[in-house]
Length: 555
Image 1 (cartoon, rainbow, N blue to C red):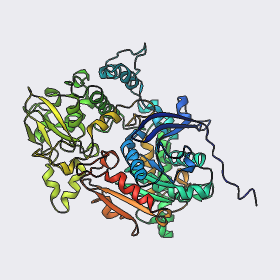
Image 2 (cartoon, helix red, strand yellow):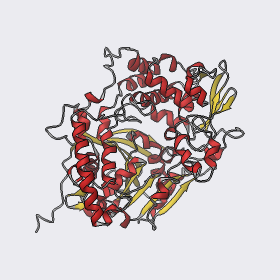
Image 3 (cartoon, rainbow, N blue to C red):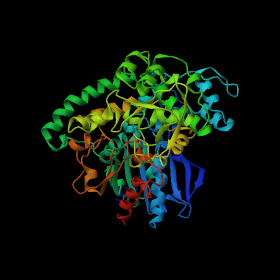
Image 4 (cartoon, one colour):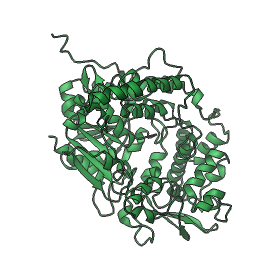
């Protein structure tokens, strides 16, 4: 009986922690643990045999995580690295500290972050010249005698076959088990959260079997950030007939798909896909690096980027002011983004701001374009159409809720007004500007230990989630032995007020009836984890503040 009742022991070892910064009473550090991949895993860098997270804690709080009042452990969204959650992590710990609680926030990194391209960023952050990184990645410039070998393709990344959903949730469990060995303490201490796709992953974590217990037994509560926590949103598992039928159909289909990954038939990454592909996320990171190192200088970034199909199509989609401009790549007289002049901060804003970029998943309310005349964008649809009943809610998915504008003067040097300097701008209001572009630039500029965007996000994770939602409970999904376990715990749901998620997925798959549900005013999807510490109304970041208040109710 003593053996049967003994606590499980984590397979992780060799804990290492490096303090990265101390700011405004909050210590940020990088924690990593040795947790090797299986012996038969494809060849991979040694870094892939470690897991880790960014740890945020109050400087005047306990040094050991096990002594904290609570620990928020967060899974990232699609393509997001641990640095994605830097703002909300800092803000939540800071707000909790002001309420008299010493909590920690762990921004988890998926195992696939071990493959991130960071050398160019690390070098440029030391040299102070962002073009060192741009030219390293795109123009063959050697750095310290090393030439970038080129972006990896799906065929180069067989190791991602070992980095699906099971690996992601298992890594989270092993980290939690190693840092807080007591099961009873884990169940009192951890608040399990996720942003976007990370919320879905957290739903699977709650229903996955770990040493004979559901993942929900590791958590005191659950929190969804513009997402939902569920492994079974349409309640298939509540009906034995549907449970058996869907598993009989989806399970074998999923096995075929998994074999396709291992055989190199299925793409392992987004790769050369415009807007969501490898070079797109590198472009956004480099734009952040440039804005971080030389915010007011006239940008030379685009002039140093080659013309190729992926880059040009991405820039065209994100920038095009009209369908005509998009169809002709600016040849209708509107020009391309390369035909205009921007400071580095303005270029970053044009690529990610909710009043500029045409892709809603990149949008943040980081301020407004300035320094020259602008025109309203109508591609892929005008922002005003999103106000239409019913239909308008789904249009938000494409390009967001706000009026978007594009520059019109090719001679003007366009500049940027930060989120807290937008009073009087005709196409926005301070109520819809919630994120500091300086924070966004600094976070995007990060190299080691974790990038803001993963270079090679594993598509297998998305396929696994789809299979799980479709009812697969055998084969690769055999660990998913429970359902609905998170709903028995306290739940917090934060919807972004300017995001499409609440009006679409949130309508069809509502939060638990007893959940603490808040709507973050003027926030876009990414703002849920990227808002400024102080908002334009003088209040703290609503995302971090309301999460901290929820945690305080847990005792």
